[in-house]
Image (cartoon, rainbow, N blue to C red):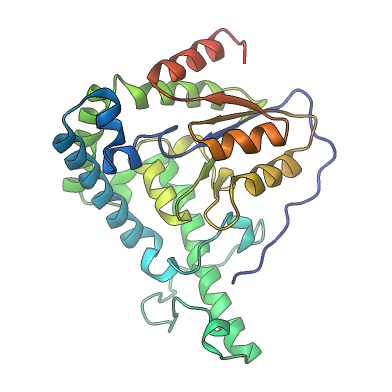
Length: 286
């Protein structure tokens, strides 16, 4: 497995800073519930059409993950956070690096019985280069968007899918985007996202749903291997105990972890919960 790097230690944090920690699926964006039918069932919608929407978005998620973020290479090397694999400030010129022919294997040499240090160091360097490329790509496309990564046909398809989904879902994602924009506009506030899925598809979802601009790569966590409680503990250690934390989520795991760590929890069950949060942010109650 990749080596875990610890965040730089902080003092107790800034009591004036607010950290908004978002769950991904079914909080920030509708995805898994489209695929498993639960969203259609809850709102008595056309199951077949919602399934079609979910499958079409899923296809774009994996196309983007494969084309731009090395999903096939990294499926077995999932990371919780970018700092677990790349030291802050690391700069490597990858402009002439040949990712296709560098001999990288998706499985670490350790797990296949090759124990030579040189072999593992080479593999780890190849792994790091892929995450460095992801870091560079993310920095670029947060501003430029999908046209830099997908063909125009895919970009238009995604726009149509997102538009239809928001019409069906009472502007769920537009409401979320208003919340994110309000938080991003405040110098004392920070958006963080914790995903239950693999790190790479997490990035693709944020891009496809138009939310990437509100999350620097350092603000993206994947909880698949560590769990959400461990991610929340990490975030709290990173920013300090004096900050105000608001966890926004729809699941029992993040709610239980929030209560255990004494963090404010804002439950999301329907779009009206996002509207209430948007109003609270607009009125500066949050």
